[in-house]
Image (tube, rainbow, N blue to C red; front, top):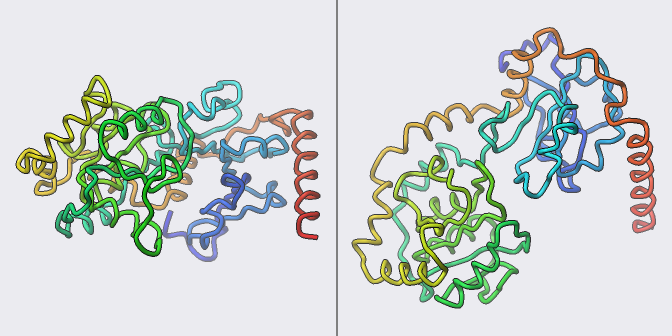
Length: 336
C-alpha cells in the first residue's frame, strides 16, 4: 500500500463527519502517499472509502451512497455512551468497523507505541516528592460506572490531589505545557487514579498508560480486560477491594513498605509481554493503510453494489440537511 506509483490514481478517503464538532485529525494531517484524504462532502460521489465518526451520528443522515464505496463506522468511545454502536439495524449500513474493540475489522486501541514505551523506560522512576499519596486528572463529569462516587469516597479515605475540573483541589505549580506537564506531575506521586468513564470490553484508555509512562503505579477502575493491555504486576485493580476505604488502607501500607511498593515496577526490568509487542508492531502502520488493506481484502471487486442511494432514508436526509442549514445560519449570525 505504501508503494503506490505517483502515476496511479490514489484511493479517495472522505471523512464525512466531524470529530466531536471539530475537524477529524486524519483530515487535518497531510494526505499519506498511498491515498488522498479529504473532509469535502462535495466529493462523496468520487469516494472509495467513507469514514463516519459514530459519536457525531447526527451528521450521517444526508449521506448518499454510490455502488462500490466502502463505508467505515468509527469510534474510540465506549458503546455505553453511544448505543447506536450496538444497534444492529443502524450498523448494518456500514461495511467495516474501526474501534478500540479487538473484534473490530480495524483495531485502533489506545495502546502507546513501542517508541513511547522505549522512551519512558529509558528514564528512571521519578522521585515521589508529593505529600499526597495519589493524583487524579479528571475534568469530565461523564460517568457510566460509578467512578465519580468511587473517586469521592477514595478522597474521603485518603488524600488525593485532583488537578482536573472535577473535585479540583490542586493547581499546577507552573505553566501547563500539555501532556508533558501532565506526565511530569503524575510521576511525582506514588499512585495515579486511572478511572474509566464506562466499563465495557477492551475499553482501556490513555488513563492507565499515562500513569505507567509517567513512572508511577496506576489505580485502575474499569474493564477486567485491562490485564491484556499492560505489563503484569504493574497496576492496582480497584475491583480487588471491597470498598474505597479498603483500597485506601492498601495504598497506605504500600507507601510505608518500600520493598512492596517497588515490586510494582519490576516489569520495567523485563521485556514487554510478547502479545503487546506483536500488537504494537502491527499497529505501527498508518491506520488508513490498514483500512485500505482490509477493504481491498474483504471487497476485492470494489465492495457491495446493491446499497440504496439514501441508506438512512429520505426523512433522515431532509432532517440532517435542515439541521446543517440551521447550524450554518447560527454560525453566520455569531460571526456577524
